Length: 131
Image (cartoon, rainbow, N blue to C red; front, side, top):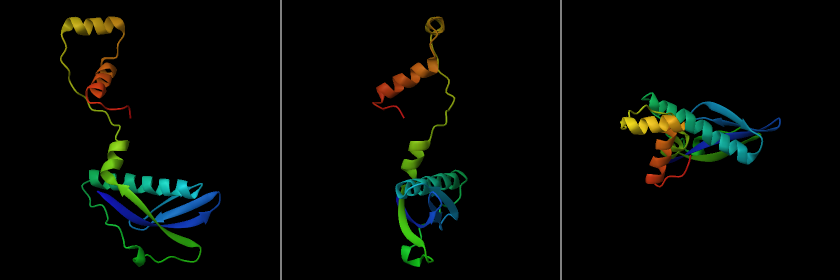
């Protein structure tokens, strides 16, 4: 589900800094586009970590409830935690595969990485592009 979180931007040496009040985290970037990307990434990382720990991801504050000081700019960042997780989930899992011994022997003789071949075949079968 997509959420929209308020962030507070400030000009910093070499770019911008962002504070995300709902997560009490800071990040920085060298341009406005970069700081928005970095804020989204920080929110996504913390959010999925909270989910993995069985904790509640904070609901976004209402922008009108956020107080800014002179020199600060309120902005908004959208994040879809499910999409973020899919895009950044690169952990591997162990899976036992049963092969005929003759096929395993041929693969070894050819110097094939059976796991790599299986991944390519699964992606082709599922019509998936490389991530």
